Amino acid sequence: MIDVLYFAWVRERIGLPRETVETGAETVSGLIAELVARDERYALAFSDLASLRVALDQELAGFDAPLKGVREVAFFPPMTGG
View 1 (tube, rainbow, N blue to C red):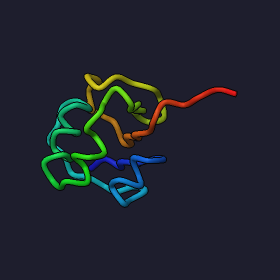
View 2: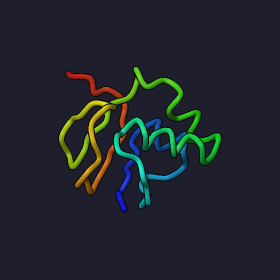
View 3: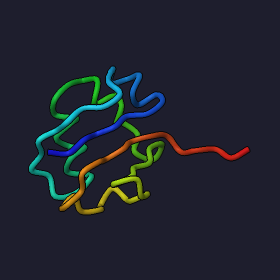
């Protein structure tokens, strides 16, 4: 089981701030594929991965990062400075 957190417009599109997911995915990309297969809302939220960032246990990671041992995955748009 992995806690999946959604922030900003990702949360708005999916309609949830967080959920616990049972997954067989080995990477972040695999998890995204499982989520997209669930519902059109997920497909919309993950339609442009170039505009998304991911953190595994609060550390920035890539979409090819392994999920083994990960407890939390967070998806959010790129942050802007200021």
